[in-house]
Image (tube, rainbow, N blue to C red):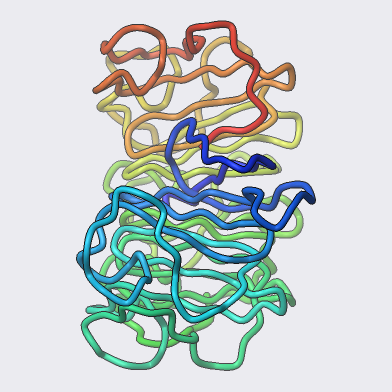
Length: 341
C-alpha cells in the first residue's frame, strides 16, 4: 500500500518514524537486527536480518500471522518458519517474499488478496501465492496485491472492481493475473483504489480509479489498463496516497497529482481541489526519498532533513502544529534522518 515505504534500520530495537507503505533492505548486521518495517492501515510488520517476520496491531483478519485473529500491541512472530527478504503490510492482509522470490500472503481474502486461488474468507497463517512465479518486489494494498517478477513483468490479484489490477477488466482475481501491455517494471505500488508502476526506463504508468486525477493522465477517466503519466518525465520512486500520487524524478524533484482536498499535493495552492497532471511541489526542494500516507506526504533530503505537507491531524507532519499545510514544512527538532515511511 501505501507502496508503502519501509524503514531500514540496523538496530536491535524497533524505531518507527512515520507510517506509509513500501519495502527495502538494510545493511548486514546480527541475526536479530532489524532489516525492514512496513506499515499498513491498522497493523505493521518488521523483518529481522535472519528473515523472521513479526507483526502487531489489528489482527482481526489474521493479517498478523501468528495463527489467530487477535490484536497484539507488541511484535508477534509470524508462524511457519518461513524466512523472508521483504514484507508488505496492506489494509487487512500481509505479503512477503522469500530469498528465491516465492510469495506468501496471509490475512483477509474475501476478494482474493492472498492469491492462493481459493475463495476462503481469510488465512491466519502464510499461504503460498499460486502460479509458480518468482518475484523481485511485492506490494499489498486494500483488498489486492501486485508484484513484479524477476523478469520485470507485472502481476496483480484480488479486488479489481475499480480496475486497480490493470488487466483490462473490473473483476476480482483469486490468483496472479498479468498486467496488460507487456510493460517491464522495476516496481508496482498499490493503494486504495489505484495502482502505479515504474518501468525499467523510468516512466510511470497508473491504472484504476481516477475520480481525483490520481492517475496523472490529464483527465478523470478511470483506467483498467496502464496509462502513462503525462509530462514524459523519468522517475526513480513513487508513492501512493488514498486519492493522490507523488513521485521523485531522477534528479530528486518531487511532483504530485490527484486530490488536493487536504493540500496533499504540496504545491502551495488552496483553491485547487485536484490536479490531473503532475504538479511541482512548492519550494524547489530536492529529495533523496519520498514517503506517502493517506492524505499527507514527506520528503527526505540528502542531508537528512525531513519535510512534510498535507493533512496534519494528530500532528503527523511533526512541525509542532495540527494545522494542514499547503507547502512542505520542516519536521521540528533539527534531527538528521536516514529513512522515512
